[in-house]
Length: 385
Image (tube, rainbow, N blue to C red; front, side):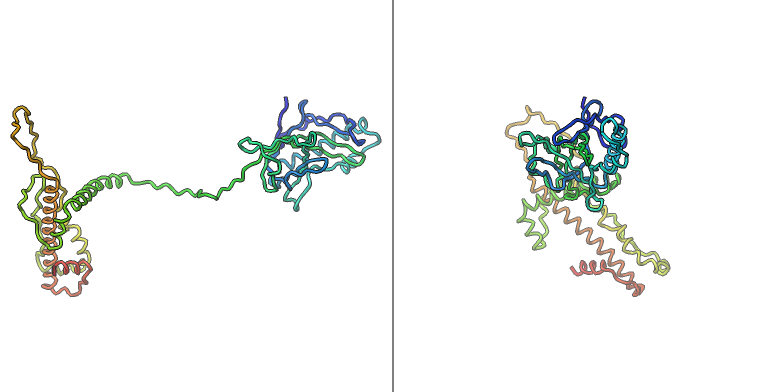
């Protein structure tokens, strides 16, 4: 059974046999290679060609270019030469007339590899079989589609199957004959035509993620209610905001709107001694104010009252003359808007009261060395309003 070998250091040259020379045309002789009773087929590494596929008047060939990055294949070729020279020397008396020495065989032996560009490349000339003037070489791409020989250039990467046929013997040389049996055109790999940088994966804190989930629903509800209210009651809201007119209280309050807590206590100063001893900590006052800001815990989201009860109606007892009036959605939103404005005014009054208290303390105890922040100017703007 025919086998394709790989030219590496594990190849055993003991299986390679050289058949007794036979006469060929031109007065030459040919020594055929046999490996395991089959032709010697080799699959070398990927390479390019020097000038593609060359076609002459009587022959067709291609110069395969291997780089010095294929040391295993280069060593295999050198070992093949040494093995052939040794077998020829061992059979010199039965194969040839005259006395041949080892140095004569080495001098007559033509290496199948030629050094190119100062050892950067190694060229291996490989013949292509012709039948009735046509090439028998099959060339495929990676999808196993046939490719025309004219499309192969000196930049086309290829993989090949080579047959090392044997040694051509003439009166002055020994030359190894190689033939290309099959070729595959490889696609060039352009690695950096797309982004290949991988960003590191950041572990998200699960607790922070759940906290965000708790906040998101209320924000969405607020935005939805506000957008719907602005879309349906644009005329009323514009009049109220532009003229600063409070909405009428003729709409009844619903149980699901909670009251604003009124138990907020404005911080006071107990005695003068504490103020004098804490002058160095006045810079922390904005943080303390933020911690006890009246805006926190005073504006609550509308929620259903716990006093609601489920009522069952018997349809048979309800008269056809009884009418059930359902409150309009716009009225409900209008009540929610009015309640939100009322809470905002309460919060503003509480904040203004706290600011006036702080200003009074500053003026009473002549705290002129305390620098005013941008927040003070904001409260003064509120005061002027």
